[in-house]
Length: 99
Image (cartoon, rainbow, N blue to C red; front, side, top):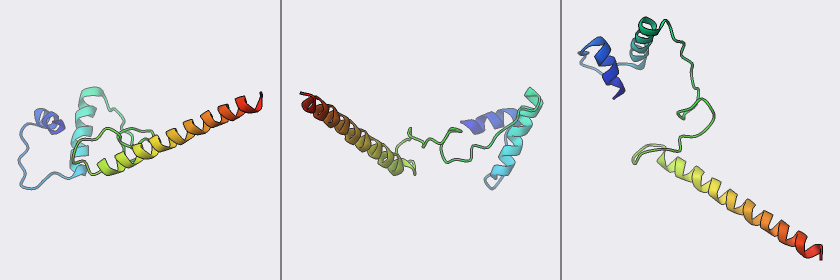
């Protein structure tokens, strides 16, 4: 889908081998430079989709990170349940000891 934008701008690209990322990045930079007056691009430096340190929790079936995502979500749920049970226990103990 994203490559369609590049083909729309440059026309059909004929090559026998897949384009390298450096070539694709240069093409995208040229599109924005000529259309919008040199938009700056920043590196994300993370394996997710955002600039903040969040893992990619919206994945499709077959994504290589699918197992990792479910592991992190399960760990988060487990921690949430343990913390909730702990606070309920603290409240119960406080109520019992104040009588």
